[in-house]
Image (cartoon, rainbow, N blue to C red; front, top):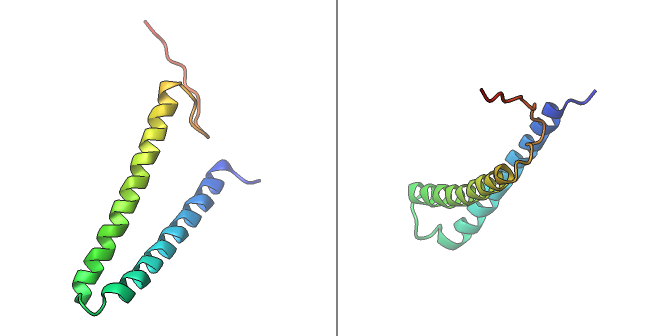
Length: 87
């Protein structure tokens, strides 16, 4: 049987692959444009900063989406519902 956690793990692996592909594409694009003017250290720093900003934007979008789910009290996927007792 396929467990929900294994699907989430597969999805995480695919997202990691996409991020690596994005990093490779960005590196190739930046190398074409800036390699003559930048040292390797500065080039690596530039690529790292660009990827960091893209991932931060993605993280912020996910946080906003989670806040929206919480406001309408939508259960999160694969979550276990818990009972809350008010005394």
